[in-house]
Length: 424
Ligand code: HEM
Image (cartoon, rainbow, N blue to C red; front, side, top):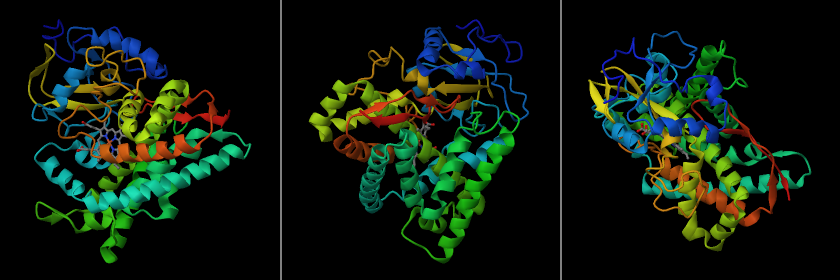
C-alpha cells in the first residue's frame, strides 16, 4: 500500500519530482521521460500539484498514471473513472471543457449514443470517397512541397507539408468551404497549443482560448445552418439530420462537435507526420527497409510513428467512488491523469522503448488512448492519411537534410512548430 493512502487530498504531500511546472514541460521528450521512468518505478501512483492555471480553481492536485497497464485499466473502466468531471490536466472549469470536447467528456450510455451517431457517418461508401480524395490531396501537397524545396527559399517542413493534409481531410469530411479552411485550422491548432507563449501569454490565455473556441464553434453552427437548407454529401449534412434520444442535435452540440473534430483531427496527425519523417531521416536504414516493400511495411511503421510521436500527451479522468489503482487508494472525486507519453516508453510493456523501430511487433502503444470507450475514433483515418502521404513523400521526394526542430511548449501536445528542410 502506498504511504499516501490515508492522507486526504488537502494534507497529502506532493511527490518530490515535479511534473507540473512549465519548466518541466520545456525540457525535451527524452529528458522528461527520465523523470517519468522514476515515477513508473514507484510502487503506486504519485500525487502532484496542479499546474499553474489561467482559470481560477480550488483543485488540490492530481494522481499521475504513468504505467501502460494502469492507463489501460482506467481507460476501460468508465464506471469507476468518469470523463464527465473533466479530462484536462490543467485546472479548467467543466463549463469551459464541455463545449470544447463534446462526447469526449461523456460516459456510457450517453457517450455510446453520440459516438454511434458520429461513427455512422463513416460508412464504407464515405470511406472509399474519402480515401481517393485523401490520395489526390496527398499528391497535390507533395507537389507543392517539392516546388517549395526546389525554389531555393528556406522551407519549413511543418508549414509546407505536415499541416496541410489533416486540415484538408477534416475540412472535406465535415464540408468546410475551401476559403474557411485556414481560419479553422489556425483556431484548432492555437486552441490545442494555447499553453505556448507564441500563441498567448499566461494572462491572456483564458481569453485567447475562448476566442479560438468561439471561431470554431461559430464556423460549425454557420455551416450547420447552410446544410439544413441545402444538404450535401458530407458529415455536417448527416449530423444536422441525425437524431439522438429522439431529438436533433442543438446548435450548442453541433458547435461542440465541430470543435472536437477540428482539434482532434488536425494537430494530432500533423505532429505524427513531422515526428515520423524526422525519425526516418535520422534512421536512413529503416527508411530503405520500408521502401523495399512499402505496402507490406507501412502499417507497422505508422504505428511506430504514432508511438514515437505521442502527439497527445495525456487525458484525465475523475474517480467516481473510492477505488484503487496499482495499490494506491484513490478517493471519490480525485483526478487521475493518464500520461500516454510515459506509457509509450514503459519498459514493462515495450521492448527497448527508447529505440525507434518500425519493425517492432507487437506494438501495444497508447498513442490513440488506453483502449475502451473513448479510443480514438479517428485512428483509422489518421493511419490512412499517414500511409498515403508517406507513400507520396518517400517515393517522390529526393534526399533531404533537416535542421533542428523547434518544439511547442506545452504539457498537452508533443508538437514540432517548425523544422527547416533543404535538398541534400
Ligand atoms: C495520429 C493522430 C491521432 C492521435 C495520436 C489521436 C489521439 C487521440 C487520443 C489519445 C484520444 C483519447 C482517447 C481516450 O480518451 O481513450 C482521441 C480521441 C478522439 N479522436 Fe483522435 N487522434 C488522432 C487522430 C484523429 C483524427 C484524424 C480524428 C478525426 C478526424 C480524431 C478524432 C477523435 C475523436 C472524435 C475522439 C473522441 C472519441 C471519444 O471520446 O469517443 N482523432 N484521439
